[in-house]
Amino acid sequence: MITTVPRSSERMSYGVAPAVVFILAILAAIPALGQPLRHDDPRLLFTGDILLSREVEVELKHRGGSPWNHLNELFYGVDWVGGNFEGAVGTASQCVSSKGPCFAVLESEVELLKNAGFQALTVENNHAGDLGAAGRKQTLQALQRAGLRGVDFENSPHFVDVGNLRIALIAVTTIPAADGQVQQVPSAELLEKLLLASRRANVVVVSIHWGNEFIPWPSEAQRTQAAWLVEHGADLVVGHHPHVIQPPECVAGHPVFFSLGNHVFDQANPKTKEGLIADCRFSRRLFCRAIGTHTDAGTFVPRISGPDSAANSALAGCTPRIKARQDN
Image 1: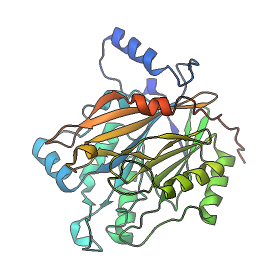
Image 2 (image 1 turned 90 degrees about the horizontal axis):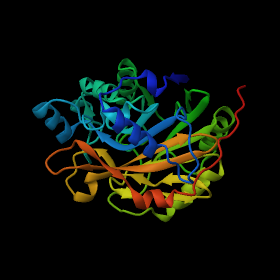
Image 3 (image 1 turned 30 degrees about the vertical axis):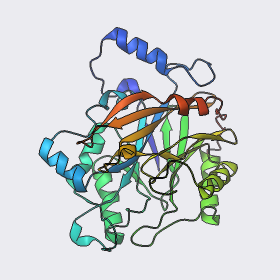
Image 4 (image 1 turned 180 degrees about the horizontal axis):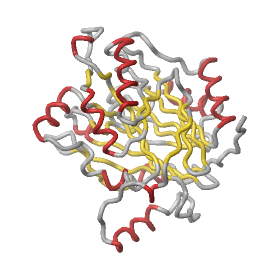
């Protein structure tokens, strides 16, 4: 399926003083190697883990509003926004296991994602199967009804057209879900998807659920898997599951965000209150940087904390070329 995304100038805008807009635009347009990007170069954002059940649901009911009130201006100023949706749409009575947390999400909460500016959510993680096969189906249908795309392994790659650029998104989890579903890296099936994506798209993005919870550095398995993904066609890897930031690195010339950390979640450990947004622009090359987010104690609503200088330094020379594609 190919989705054409309107340019940022065609989407909703929020009132900001012209001088401020001009300054922010200049700062945002500075790429990693100092080469100016055109104003119309596509810009895409990728966030970490998003939870809309448990204590996040309680806060939403109590305070009202949206978890993205502080990020609307950023999200509506770009061409495309995606994130990782933890849980399944349905009721707690559908939970297939009592051994761990079960994230049942009310369908009414899904509209918040659309209103925030998201276009797609990856739904391949260890909580995607919390409500079994029925919950997986309900989730995809609820996202579709809200005007969003749910991307799992089965329907990967998902293709998105932004201007003249075509992006392929592949969703993978190496962490087993409650219903037993999991993927292997490497695998013949994943290789087939990477090859297809590389032929039909200019940029291949792999969204992967991996690693160890609360560990702020990638495991050897993650490093090995990242190298394999890049070797076989991934231009950009965005990871999640540890719930804390794992610093991005340049792997064989390609940006790998090992863990973006939490985006909207209800964990209280201070490290779980920090997150990254992968902010990527596409010219003749791919340029990615990291925007930090912080969630205050007593709330699950994130704020922008500014550029992450350490992450951006690590990504400074990581600018793979945009590939030509075969349209048939």
